[in-house]
Image 1: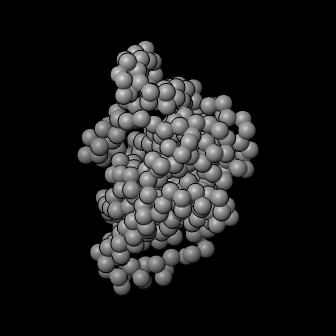
Image 2: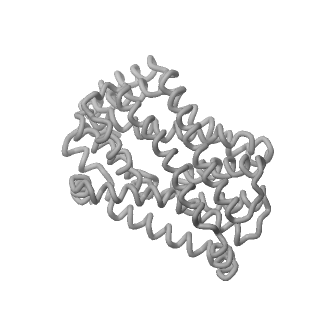
Image 3: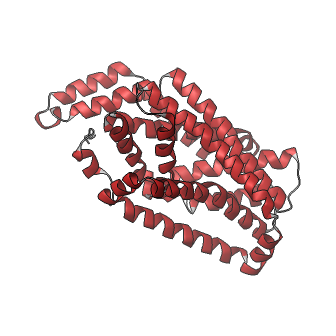
Length: 333
């Protein structure tokens, strides 16, 4: 598979994003309705009516804390690859504009971030795409760190935890075996059909090699751990508002449940983790805190509203304020 450079070829290879977004929004609605009916609509309505909504802005502040630190990581990656002509505010606009792309099937729409980056900075598409991948891998390692204590407490989760951990670490380690990668690329260049297509793939590998060096990886995972901890605190505030005890145990379990559910949603490859993340959130809440079913579902719906859908909303606002981004989406849709 060849990777496109910054050209019309890159644009042509981007997925049909408009349809992908509609699939994500439709699936989100179905998941919400499914959970509501499963929990008993009347009990869920009573639970949500008792929720002190003045707490919810605090949850959104925790989510914004997560977004700010993740943007710092994004911009750090951009700078690490030598991009110096992208102002911070424009980089932030690009970063936030990528939030709605998370609800495309398998998140493939996020490749558009690399295309926008190439248009605004001149960084080749094939070199910018590893930034998107590095973001996801560093986030995955961060939430695994946050879920470690809970996994130790519930050994049945170990197989899934170790599978994801080894897969993520495998990508990082393999990218650093430089002699092997260069030998494979050199061999591929000898094939008549593949030879002309290797240059973008070399750019992809070189960027991946730089991003997954120990130094930037440690910085990125550290930023990710602190940022996702912020969302865990936001989930704790929701649980408090729904009547769960205000204790260190509840806080610890809130961080664990949200972190592990984020992993489940990510590996599911479903748009935005929809369905998988909600099922994991509800199931782990019932397992760890044993609340009424309606309370577990209410907490799940509220935290997804304050994290995933809040981010999607912010991204859509950026699209409205940045017609060029929307036109590019239309071109690719």
